[in-house]
Length: 405
Image 1 (cartoon, rainbow, N blue to C red):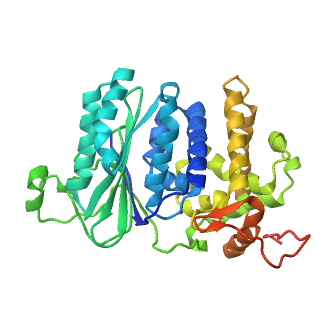
Image 2: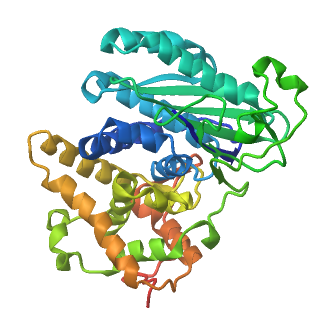
Image 3: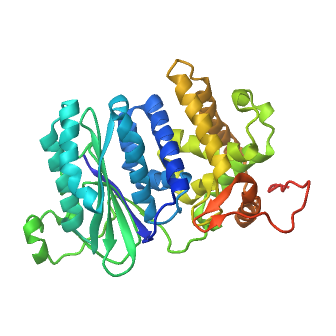
C-alpha cells in the first residue's frame, strides 16, 4: 500500500442540487461498472487513488472543475450508487464526511463479515491513513472527510480531505494498498491541493532519522516538502482558461465529434443518430474509462463533457447528460448478456480521437468554444445552481459555428 498523491483545492461551500446529484450517481455507477467489466476491481481502486484521474472524473460528472466540492460530492454519489450493488460489483465504500467518517470502522467490519476479508487489519489501515494525514503531515489541514474503498478481495484505496484552518483551501490525500511497504516512509500515492509554502512532512523518506513516532511530532524541527508523490494544484479562480487544458487533445476531440462525418468511421456505426454534442460528452467519458494515466494532467478539459453546476465553463446540459447515461446503461446491460458491441464502440470513440491528435495542430480559441456552449445551453436543458439557461435574445439562425475554419 502507498499514499498515491494529494490535491489542493479552493474550499467551496454549498450543496449539490438534486438534479445533478441524481445524474452524478447514475453516470458514476455506469463508469465504474464499465471499468470493472474491462479492467477489474483493482483498476477501479488504482484510478480512485490517482488525484489527477479523480479530479478529471469529478469534472466529467459536472462538478466544478477546480473546487473541493468534487471530493465530497463524488464520493457521496459513488457510495450512494455502488453500495446497493456491492455484492455483485465486489466493491464497498465506507465512511464519508463529518459524522459519517466516524462510522468507517463499523462499516468495514460489516464488509468483512459479508466477504470474509480481515476486518481488523482493514480498520487498522483506515485509522493509520487518517492518523498520518492528520498528524504526521503537519501542513495545517485537519481532516473532515474519510472514505475507505475496499474490494471483496481485501485490496483498498483511501480518499480523504482536510480543511486549512486559516486560508480557505482544502487538501485531498489519496492512498492505495498496492505496493505500500510502510505507513510512514513516503506512503501516499497522491496529494491534491494549493501550495501554501513549506510544510513539515514526517513521512518523507528524508525524515527517517528525525522521526520518533507520532507522539514526538510536536518536538520535530525539520521541514520537508511533499515532492516525492503526485501532487495536483488547482487555481482559486472559477473560469477555465486555455492554459488549463491541453489544446491538442481538446481540439482533436472537438474536431472528431463536431466537424468530422461520423459515417466515415466504420467503428462508430452503432452511434449513428447520436448528435455531435452528445458524442463530445461520450468521447470524454470514454477517455475517463479507457484513457492512460498520462491523459489526466489537465482535469479542466473534462469539464467540456457536462459543464459545471456553477456555470463554469458553461451550464450543465442535462439533455446531453441523460442521453449519455442512457447509451452507457444500454451498453452495460447488453454486455451482461454477452453483447459487448455498444461498449466497444464507445471505447473506439476514444481511440479515434487519439488517432486524430497525431495530426492535429491547435488553431482555435477556447473562449470561443465556451461562449458557443453557453449560447447553446438552453437547447440542451442547461442548468446551474442559479436556474435554467435562457434562450438568447438574438440568435443567428441556420448557422453552425466551426471552430476550425
